[in-house]
Image 1 (cartoon, rainbow, N blue to C red):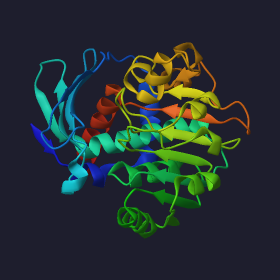
Image 2: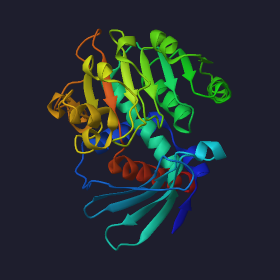
Image 3: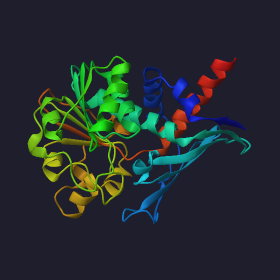
Image 4: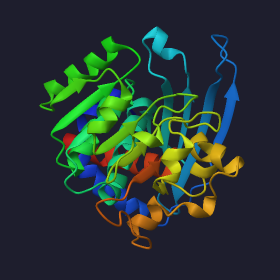
Length: 317
């Protein structure tokens, strides 16, 4: 059994290479049961932690299971919120071929999924991005979006100006023009794409701030009691999700308005499976506001794990 560390995953992963692979996976026949989602008390604060168990397989080839925890107070300890492992298993004989660290795998595949959605939903000439959040996902979301759109300027907002500056400095080192903004509203006024990756229990993006042609990419707030946007943002937008089975139930950005009768599941235009298979269309025109909500899908993990396995074989052959 091979152990594949976060460092190896980071060194082998290439968004331009992987995003077409991910698109192909969304068009293929995989078996993906609904993920197991549990909350537990962490003894640190009032906000509970989460245990996720996510299986997926392709009959006769490979199956994978991700076991991951999400700890909302890890930022205070300078630890990533996401921790876990991914088991890549040969479906023919049941042996575990590889054990991958789940943090970087999750971060990379999540960012790639947002970029894949953006390729359908943001304007082709979108060149300014606001990144809301300063966790491990933030710089990867920016890098991934930069592979599908000609991003020239990035604004970063976080509750900690020091962390925001650190993200901006990291991106600038990569050759991306990144700056911090003191307010989300100010950054949103200048952005073609607004990407949000937080654990916020309250809306951060207000619909009254949005302007025609923007694309809203909501990646955090993965539980029904969390949300990153208000009702007006939802109602002003054409809404898309990564998975019809997961997002309306698991994500507060949708689950709360649905429960309150503000929004209906039937109002979701398409999920990423339908977009990739060309069963539904993405952005309709230049003035449309598009809204993409991602909660994560086990297909993305399996696709990324197989990609890393193949890249590792290439690098060592």
